[in-house]
Image (tube, rainbow, N blue to C red; front, side, top):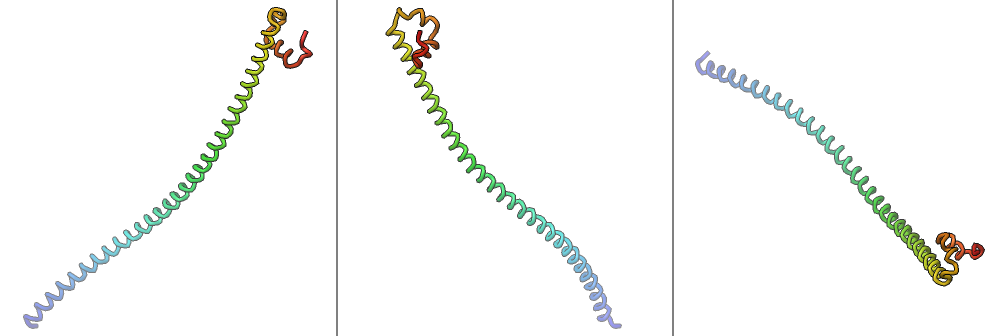
Length: 133
């Protein structure tokens, strides 16, 4: 063999070793890349699941908000009805008190013994005359 051939063979061995090292590095990098792609796919699945969960929760919030508005409106209507009924009862009580005061003022002292029994009996007499003595 010639000197040139020896040098070429040494260079060839060196290049072959470098090529094997590079192939091994490439294989390792491909394995790492494959693992990373699997991780990315898993994370994509998680992101998709979370997005679906967010959509479901947003729908629930919207539904509950609408229900809350409807209930608030119903509550307002019911509150107004209760207040109206209370005001009617107050008017009736005021009218009854006014009638009691009118009767008490008209009959004055002549019925004072009757009124000593209390306003409830006199109011009953005003409302229904059969209770008059």
